[in-house]
Length: 242
Image (cartoon, rainbow, N blue to C red; front, side, top):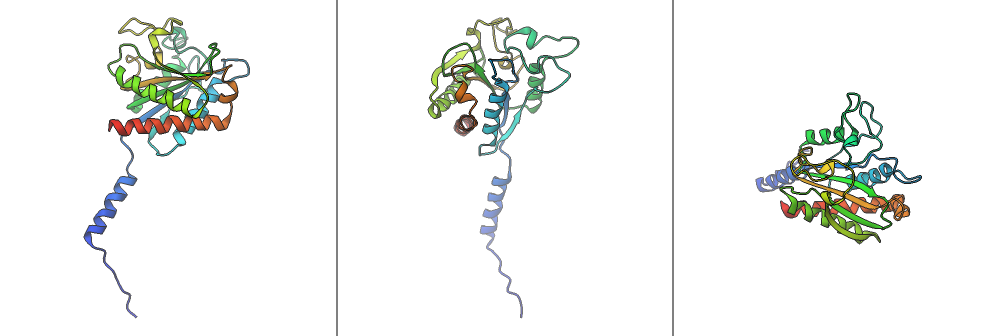
């Protein structure tokens, strides 16, 4: 008995090929996540652990983008890989015994990826507020877009938690430590400085307080909820810009 052979119309084959091409191709946007590597913040509290869990949850949330994590924790050959402030020269731009810092390593790795969006994730401390803060770089060419993105991410986190929305602030307003942007001369976050970080869109999130928000931040379920909320809002923002 002869086998029957059926031929699909060219129009259907063309449509299928287009769909396969769309679903199989990687999104153009590159995203870099920078969880805090600080393990010395708060009693019996690891900011590195909580922030990394949030970032991992975000990266695992669909849709999958071209996402990368830069993290110095556990790496040798650098100084301050598990501690240090993002606003202190000694912990960021300084070279000690011929070694660059963990922060410098992370930013160098990020720049190699040439991301469109850079998101740093930290926890605050000493505020006595169960809240979320967004930070952007003072005098940045994309300050308006960074402010919008940071504001949306902060709001998205507050919607799925009981944390207070403290809005978006400029990194020059913190008044802590001594790292300054070479362009403006203002105090700034090393990770957000355009002279250090080449990503066009850069935000830093301070999620909760290591004392006031301890129960929430150390809860794996809440970590996943926060990470998922950040990713979904980021994707929405990317789609709108596209």
